[in-house]
Length: 101
Image (cartoon, rainbow, N blue to C red; front, side, top):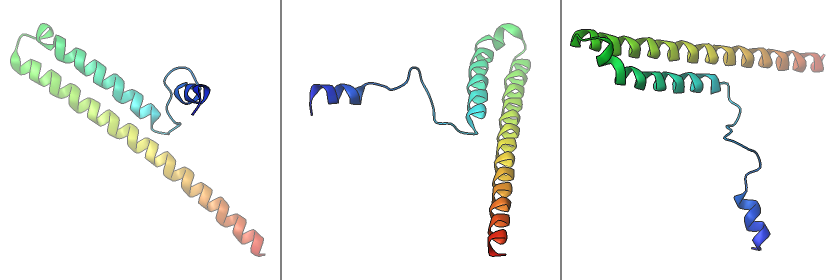
């Protein structure tokens, strides 16, 4: 392997961090934001409320709301994928039936 081949292997083609296009990228971004905000909540919850039960309720409430949000967003993406798959299958079935006529 020559020096230039090694450089070509090590160099990146694009700038920045990229991920492959996925319908779940929006859910991943939501999850990242929820984790960051959750860390902030864990750090400041004792300064916001003095009562330990209130602190627990705040952290548990945030966790439950975050979980529900991720579940709803994921189900919405799965539903749209299922709908797109059904419509593409219906189009391909219609194309096959017109070819046979």
